[in-house]
Image (cartoon, rainbow, N blue to C red; front, side, top):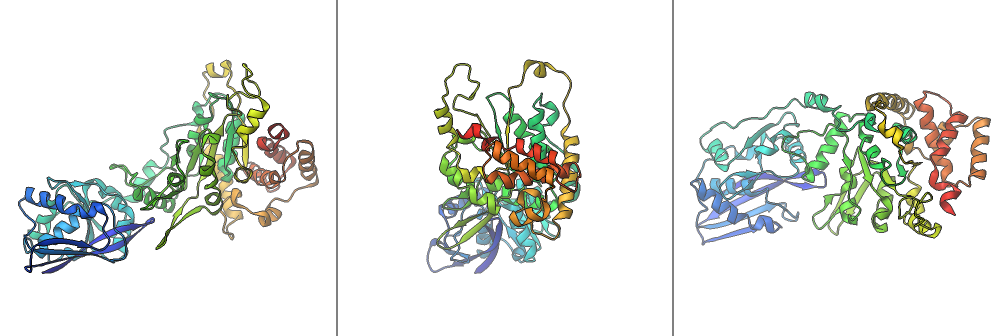
Length: 511
């Protein structure tokens, strides 16, 4: 007897339906699995055999042929255990499965018949709805994530016996229903960190506000213990809240990577990713023999924080250059190409020298030469993609001991939202969303300078020995500062503040 069961395979951040054909005949004994399965799927026969035996069923001693179509698409993972097991039971007439083709069935089996959670549930559920399936049967731990998708029945099971009884005896399964919008609204303003906890560092906090308002990449330069990491962790709390569309995009990526918790259904706050400096190229940008999203894709619609940036391998930093520009990662293989989105705000930090204290090193352990060699780990093209460079000074005792709280993230966020709304209106007919994305053509149109501002930036270029690449960055940042003040025109004091945020372009850092 031949039976067809439906599962799903992840391809990038999308899913593709897999038809699992199970054929059983009496012409011999054997178990043949075809359709480019990986080792985890090939080993499924052992898990399925033990699981079925422990719930009162068995794999028949006949010739079993299982084909996973399309046959030229490589399948991976143990998520097909449940679908293959149900297919074998129906094909061998051990259970009735008249409506089994109405459902996507996925789950990894344990030897006792219980189910383990799987990856990529959200894109699988979206694809099931698009292809008109009645419902989806999954491990119970994955149901909240799948229930985000409306117009699709989502059933969570803990043991294969529940699925068998559902098809064979009509015993109902528990349907999971989730109010996506309510879930989204309830948690949209939930942040673990707040800017009010930061003592001092008013200049750095202002730079963070400007960066968030314009979507600018930023690098913090300062000695150890000055609060660089503390500031970076609070950036998501002042960024505009995720829209529902952005939340779904972000959740899909984390679902594919298996980073969603069992109690989490939808990502409601912008992600904050902070990879260690020993990270490899592939782990950062994504890829591998079975491509997976990297850290820059996991930071999509959020923040990627590179702590002590010069300690990262130069090759790792250089592979970020194109994703920073294109806001997506393309991973190419001989037979396929996968695109992962990677629109993130880069926040980096660094010490001014290997010792961390140049030029105020109390022990004089760093020379100018050592500082130059340290700085040269960051290439010009990479720094060219970072709009704001700000020096973070050591926090004095009086500031640390002060009991008065600083400004709350909520108040800073209100100003950021006003600036973003101005930018949305300005660029509504263009393919850009915020100031950091504007190119040279848009600069001429949206960043016109009066005589005082023009003379000021000209003087700064000459006296402070600013590089040519600093000119565009200063204009972009000045445009954001003007938006924060709800000023239609860029004024001289906006230019003056923007010039302060180009520390690494000054002569001091390039001796």
